Image (cartoon, rainbow, N blue to C red; front, side, top):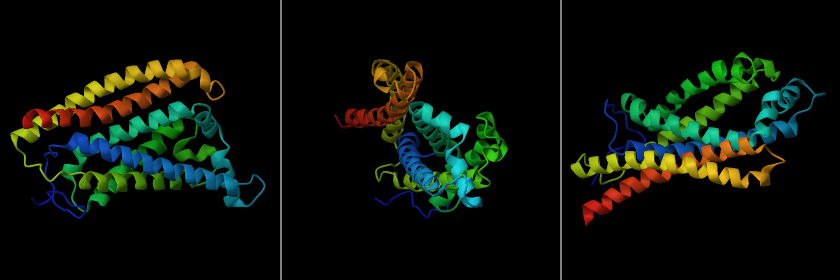
Length: 250
């Protein structure tokens, strides 16, 4: 059976794929992971070359990792990781359900264009809200917040688009079975989200004393709850579809 989706596909329809939720969750996980890896490398590099007494670029690099926003993130690292994962998955589902079917061009290019929207929102909404100023100019790192944010979102978008296109299954034929599988994935995702959230709250509350030097107990609990919800969403969507497959085979 021929593959229905390609990394170089230029066709566009208004309807999402039958497996949009499952494929979107998978793509969102991998894209968020890739973006996080790039973020860690970038911050390590900025810290390595940064100096408050150096030239312009080294001062910018120093300011990028030595500012109130960076300190706040470090103090609430568990929450930051959880929120980043949840946001990455939510954006991926928006892309899969509403945006990807309406875009034309190569799959990676679709993802990159979509990622420009959260990039702009992070500059004009998130950074000012967190005290970094419009476009991050209050951080004192020159254009690095803008360029760094752009690179991170381009990585996220490219991986999102590529993985979502490659996640298509050969057996998707728009049949009743496929529609049941898609519905099962949606129900499983909803149930997994709830179970993961509740489980994350319990685990986070019990494990919080081990992270007293990192964050307070409520902050750790919230962060682990975010992570649990994201993991539950992913597992639930796959389990819901797999359960439907087993039912139809028996």
